[in-house]
Image 1 (tube, helix red, strand yellow):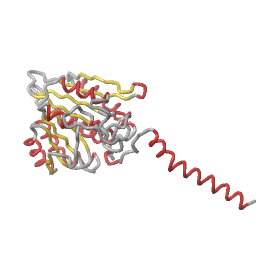
Image 2 (image 1 turned 180 degrees about the vertical axis):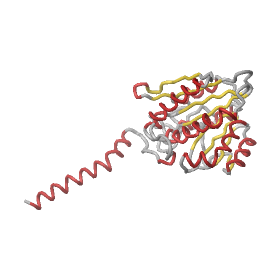
Image 3 (image 1 turned 60 degrees about the vertical axis):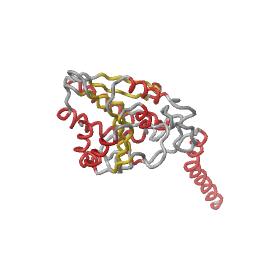
Amino acid sequence: MREKLIKIVGVVVLVILLCTLLVPHLILMLDKQEEVAESYAYSKVFYDEYDDVRTHLLDTVDILEEKGYDVQLSSHAIDEADGLFIDTIYIPATEKQTNLIVLTTGVHGIEGYIGSVMLDVFWQEIYPTEVDKDNTGVLVVANVNPYGMKYHRRYNENNVDLNRNFPTKNWCKSDKKEYFGGDEPASEIETKFMMEILSGYKIDAILSIHAPFEIVNYDGPAKNLAEKISQLTGYKVQADIGYPTPGSLGSWCKENKVECITLELPRQSGEEIVRDYQKGFTEILIN
């Protein structure tokens, strides 16, 4: 009787282990979803959940308004039932606008957390004193891939890499297993929104925050800017990421003659990046 009980318990434990280890992978395969992404983009000193990041972003807007800035907030629903939004913050120049700083975060969902840290650096340490508000406007497109961010994935709900989904000359349909750019260019609601919002402004340059390769990747007429950023941060300048990126935001910017810098932050906590690279980050944004 005792041996039989031990066997039963053993079988139960084995079944539980199999369910724990295998069922999530089976569900992901059936749903054509990627597995949960690496945690390299998490900040040890900041939020690591999408809802917390978004609440903090909206609180930041309130603080900026209290300080007297002309803040124009827009929230574009990706999945309202799931609470997923792309939020844009636009603050125009107070006089004649001759420059527009554009920051994007979270194109790859999991990387939106370190992007959130850098936005805090910008609003708290840079914008109040370092930006010429008379002539410089600011446009932030935050949490571009809210689904990937909320569920800690690189891709969106359709398993599409948004940074391969822009309608460019080099777009091509790829294998769904990795860097899938969609069944057709601009197939995703997030990509369409990005194109719509960016096309609505006269943009000098875009800074897109990513992780974790520790390089300065540039597209369009942005080589000089990339080299200056490299001098300030110590990151290597690369005209490509090291592998093909058809349909990327950078490719789209290049074809539209817009300077685009993809700043690949390193495998560090947000605290370390703020400490080590704040000066360089400031120079990137105001020059």
